[in-house]
Length: 490
Ligand code: CS2
Image: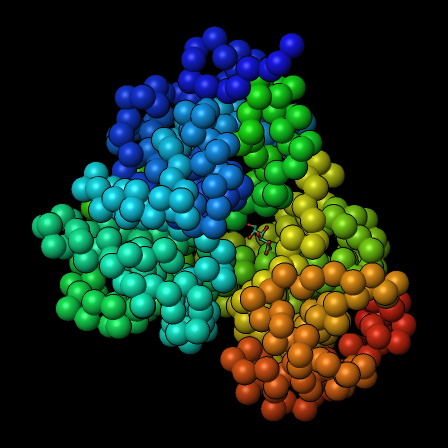
């Protein structure tokens, strides 16, 4: 007998908690760009709680920029999906009702722009991953060679990329006397609000110069720190959703119990009561962001490269490898040492919690997933803390080992000779730079020489360069597991 599809019909999904509100009685007030697993496990859940607690027309219109899968999975289900939470307390699941519908911008760019121009929309939030913006994560300038930026500057009135859609929709809203919206970046970027603001203004200077002052004076770009470990859904996720709900849910997502959202409370036209879901509103998000990017995401990137190259497919497997687990603890501690004290936060306790989260035996988080887009993740996760450690006279070896692991990963084959794609926007450039290089120091020199990646402060530091080359050489000669053992024994 075929299993019925999840839908809003009352008799469907009898075996699972439903939204604590009637979704049909709430309009949309948010457009979210990038309707991926993380959005469904994080912002959409806080928004569900906000509507349940205080009502309001705050449901979400999702816009997918890269495909049609999210629309195909969610629209036939009236935007509903199962949130499956896996932790020591077991598995729990409930239906999330905050998503109204999803527009596949690749198929219907006009609908995407119309949604952004709708006067009812007061917030545009984003989880499009670091690479989609086309903004240098440190300098804040837009990359004119970025495919979406280049295309949208050619046809700024018919954009398809992130900055183009934001600027053109703001231009149309202003032209119709419609209030602007708040732009809420929820990606792992340093000072993400300011960074997206600088990218939007830079793009506007080229595409709609008459708009620059209005955007600067009327559009808010609050910073946020977002955190919830959310693996890409698999068939197992969908099977579990079917088991728990009794119906077919093709948009199910699974995640950990932990969730954190720290937000700068600066909105031009209101916001949902996200604090009802546990969000924390603060005046300055930067220290929380730096803590998370350096301690969680920095350790994640190190373990992803070292773990993947040691043959560990999942984060929990890396944590079961004693030497690698000790290197993770070392990295977390070294990252914490680069941070200024943060009132109310015990970094040692936060670090211990991170290790426990990484060990979660119920979450299958792939090292290969975390390893992607390294050139856009390294600056805020590894390079900035490495510079800080050197400035503070601290031991840079944890960061040197992590960068060496990324460089070893850039070689494109495992110790057993298995080839893999780097899955990085600069993959072709990296492979070309490494053509014929086989010694540690040679590979390190060539990757340090890549433009706009490893800044001069590190590239010109001989102590740093020696530590990176030495760690990389050990990985190439001994293999990554033995090099990890040597690193932890040093
Ligand atoms: C991970 C993050 O894939 C990655 O780069 O480090 O997605 C990480 O899982 C989240 O930031 C956790 O909040």
